[in-house]
Amino acid sequence: MSAERILIVEDDASILRGVELNLSMEGYQVRTAQDGEEGLRIARAERPDLLLVDVMLPRLGGLELIRELRKEDADVPILVLSAKGQEADKVAGLALGADDYLVKPFGLKELLARIDAALRRRRGKGSAGATRQVRHFGRVAIDLGSRRVEVDGRPVEMTAREFDLLAFLSAHPGRVFSREQLTRAVWGSLYSGTERTVDNFIARLRTHIGDDAERPRHIETVRGVGYRFSA
Image 1: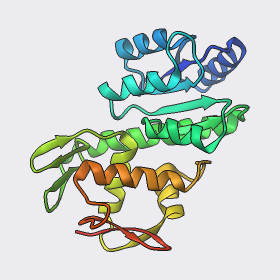
Image 2 (image 1 turned 90 degrees about the vertical axis):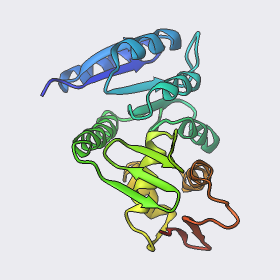
Image 3 (image 1 turned 180 degrees about the vertical axis):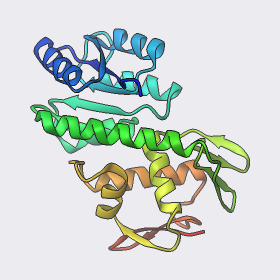
Image 4 (image 1 turned 90 degrees about the horizontal axis):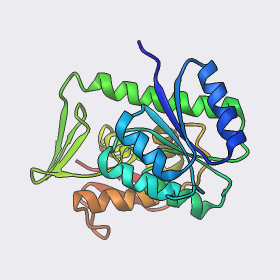
């Protein structure tokens, strides 16, 4: 299998060089960019397997870069690297479609572990695509192979993490999951964000599939516990 390709978009030259060197030593093919516009150009042209994106970038900010990429590619893993560690900053990055959020300074082992986890999820999605498996729930159809969701036969755009959450919930209809359980199952055990992120993603999923938050048909709130998917 050819080496997986990682694009690092980071304007701090010392961090960029250090991460590039270590990822290269791990066997990855690494491309770099030091501003958002260059990063977006390379990402569009070369379609890397994963991106590491700083938030504070010249010419085009990291969050805007993520927003633009998600319009074109819902599946590529994007890990945010940022000196901003406040909850609001993390929520903003994840809401735009980032798959993970690392606060500087971060340890090399943690970075490598999160990259490996994100790439394993991507590889798993690719192998699943060989077999078509579609779940139907009322007006909603979830195609696990192509990672597409349709409502009343019309495709619905959603991020990779939104799809992962919907796929996980729909795989266990009737079972109640706490926010912590959903975080571990969908974001992974190394995720350092807050459980409020789950609430934000649930709200967006309800909007995507036309679920009324007051009277949801599929994604139900179990007060004081978490969420349950109803078929």
